Length: 356
Image (cartoon, rainbow, N blue to C red; front, side, top):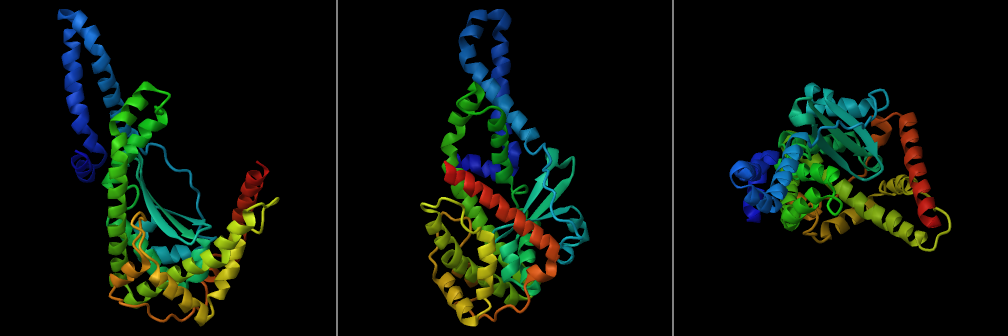
């Protein structure tokens, strides 16, 4: 049963709920037909018919109004990140770039999602997020390959807002937002009805996401320089290992028993990024990343699997970057402002946490 529901979600997206709504509407109409002829049966069967009808109505609202509200993400202007905007315009094309909001984050990551407000009647928007640490460990050439990877997600329609299964599940999320389980009858009934599907949804989303990552990697390699696409993957992989060992693990240790917030992580990440300019450090971390085991619960394949899909049976030697994308793609004033804001937010959050 779960396979049939998920298959319908993949094929029809949010409109897969019609397979439930149509039978529910028939049941409701048959129930209402008892009003004049069999009022006693109407009252007796109402305990079954009404929950079915209200749940179907909730599904219908979720189908049409999930994604109704437009995101208020502001992003960075072209004046703040002229190089990043120019690079995205080159990779994605002017039309796609014109409906994109680019924002910065404090993680070693880049991602893209699509917003289709009111079934796309109010237009589609893309939200491209690029991490400041990512800009600090890549150069313009490797960043181009990373953006080509993100553009492939849009072209393949496997971004968060474009994947049918994601929109199908978002419909449930809309209902639960306005009819929370445990506090409303409709929400509780709906949660009881589809709660058993959560495990199947999660496994299918992981499988689709892992397939999408491999497809996007291959697109980035075929649409540009395949060697640079592999180099971009390995640079990020090496930075991931290095940041864990040099920043995140020590920070977790410092937080144990701390009375005040320690030095914020983004400040440390940017300092640690400079250590990857040493060939020995960079390649040692790249080899560690290559040997990292695959986590089946992760939405991304292992670094070795992703590079193997590009034709590599062992990690190639890396030359350190000469000029960071952070220094060429974003103005220094904008970078300093965002770094200060991220660090201040983290420090305030940790101060609140440590006072509890």
